[in-house]
Image 1 (cartoon, helix red, strand yellow):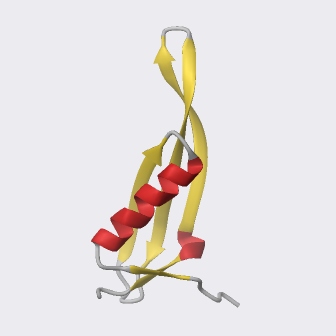
Image 2 (cartoon, rainbow, N blue to C red; image 1 turned 135 degrees about the vertical axis):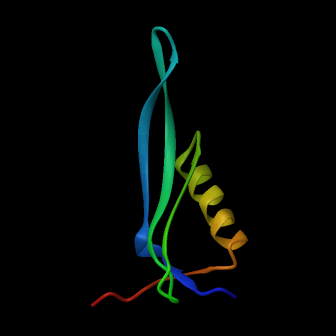
Length: 75
């Protein structure tokens, strides 16, 4: 394992993006922007048609890096 990342560093946002000349569609983006437990700064973004899909895609990308997501305690 290459370290951990904190779930608090994950953000999910919806954006309206052009679909045709006269319409837009919703696209959800899940972004991890923070540091790993080993001190490496990371920024990874994945998208999907739903918030859950974007988060699932991001979690898969994080796992592919060998990182584990932790529920951090930032007090």
